[in-house]
Length: 383
Image (spheres, rainbow, N blue to C red):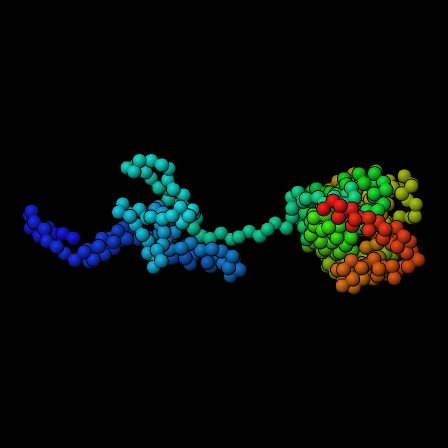
C-alpha cells in the first residue's frame, strides 16, 4: 500500500498494519452501545424462569449488532462480523431471515428499518393447544366418534362453562353401538350431541383397523372423576340425576371428599317409569332450572339417559349434560371396576360379566360379541 510522503510522491508502508487500522475504524463506527447489549443479554433473564429460558433460542452477537446498527450482519467462524467495502455486512438470505430489509430504493435514498432491541428477546415456545377447535370424526357403524382425548374434552367443557355455553356428551360402547345400529332415529339423536367419545376398546380397535385411529378410550367412569375435579377448581356446580336409590347420594359424598369445595347443586333419583310420566319429567326440568348447575350427570342406562337429556336440556342451555350409565355405583364403591391391566387390554367386560353373570351374560355373549366381530370385519373392509 502507498502513503504520500511528500507532495506528488508516495512511499510503501506495511499493508497488514494499515488494513487492520481500517477494519478497526469501521468496527468502531458500528460498535453497539454496551448498555443495550447488557440489557439484551441479562436484563430480561431476571423476569424468566429456568424452564422458560430452556425453551428459548437466543440471538447471536451478529444479530444484536445488526439490530442496533440497522444493518444485516453475519458472524464468521471466529465470531467477527464481515463487512463489505460500503460498510454493509454481507450475509446469506438464510442468515438474514430474522432481519427485515428495507424497501428496494436507489443506494443514495435507501433507509433501513431499525428493529426495536426488545424484538431480539427470545420468545417462549407455545405448547400445542390441549383442545381441538374442530376435532375430526371417525365413522363407526353410522356414528361419528370424535377424535379427542379425555384431557381435551375436560378442557373444552370447562372453557365453555366459563363462556356460558352448554353442551352434551355421549359415551357409546359396543353395546350402545349395537342398539344405535338398529334404530336410525336413535343414531340421529346421538350424532346431534356435542361430543361422542369411545367408551369401549372394540371401538378403538375398529378405528385402528380402518386406518382412522382414535387417540384413546374415554370411559364414563373416568370422565366423571376428571370433569368433577376440573369443575371444583373452576367453581362450577354439579347435579346428580338418576342411578339406583342411594347411589347418587353416596357418589356425591365421595366426589366432595375427593374434591374439597365441590358444589353439589342437587340430587334427584326419580321413580321407575318416570320417563313415561309427563308430570315427573316436568318436575325434573323445573328442578334443573331452579338449581342452575353447570354439569348434569344423567345415569339411567342407555338409551334412557340420552332420551331424558334430550327432553330436559332445553330448560338449561348453559349446562353440560353427560350420560354416564352406572358411574354412580362405581364412584360410590358399590360396584368395583376391573384392574387397570384388564381395562388397558379391553377385558373390562369380562370382569363385569364375572360380577353380574345373570344380568350380563345374554347382553355380552349373545348380542355384543357377534356385533363386535361384525364391527371389526366392517372396519377391515373400510380400510
